[in-house]
Image (cartoon, rainbow, N blue to C red; front, side, top):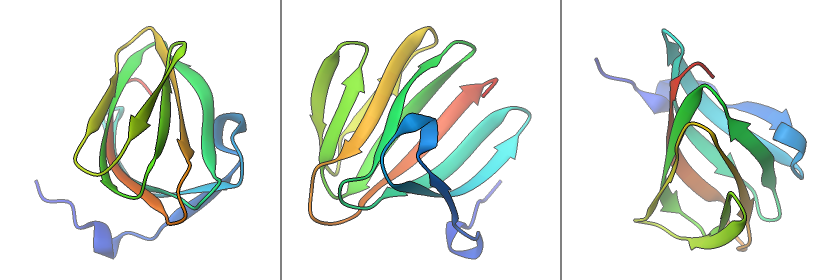
Length: 110
């Protein structure tokens, strides 16, 4: 199955999970799994949240930021990935001066 992200409208969600500013997403959902392209403008963030019934992976395409995994902050940049297994908590902050763009997949109940 192919997913054409250029043909999907971006949805802006203000203060996602209690974060700052808005997150833009182009997403599709299949049987509880979600596949998306996400975008955080400079200074925007996704608030800390737990994945009780799902796991999530981010692959960073452009920009820079930091990702909180449980209690540890880790720098993110293009070409690296972040994995949040079921039962763990994470957050994402754009610390750069350009959009932080990433591919993400939430597997399991979201």
